[in-house]
Length: 286
Image (cartoon, rainbow, N blue to C red; front, side):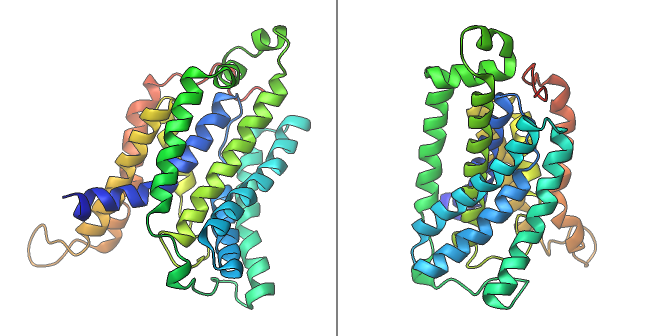
């Protein structure tokens, strides 16, 4: 049971969990974060590039996180310094990130579609699962039992009270943005060095938006957000297992209908939960 279903669910849920926790921290600080897709994309590309260069997946994993963080700096400048609309800025980040991998891939590998395959010896086996578990535990502890977590939550709930206590709201929001970029970059690194053996163009495949849906479904709390990611991961494994299944007659269900299952369930679950979710009160007010 574990190896046939639960382990695959944990594997495919790993990038969702990392990206969702990053999105949770950012939105808890008061900044809308729909740029997760872009952070995942640049993380997956530069993670693959660094792994190919060093033949060390841990180096690639770290490079993926740093690549996502660098892109998040650009997002932070736009929304915090220049006070641009956060939805528009996040969309622009996603579009910008779609062009970065093909540009550099053409220069370095003379290909805009993918990077060369990573040798098996330089790929992750199970390490990302343990790293993700450690990040989940650490996030839970910081969220509930640390001064940092309390202040970051106040930044998104009661920024005026935090400011009156002498704590910089802008600093807390910068920290939330940088954490989201780093964790979503790590999520991208798991795609190219753990779940796959190379970077493939647009391989994030909507995971950033699914991770954001998990944040909303989890009511901006660590453990419920992780559970939501596991739910979406289970639907992804289910759509893989259901391909070719025959429900009536002799013809299998069209594969296109099966492939939309994770996205359809995401929409249904989110539509039912969003009305009962209480977002941070100052979310979107930069």
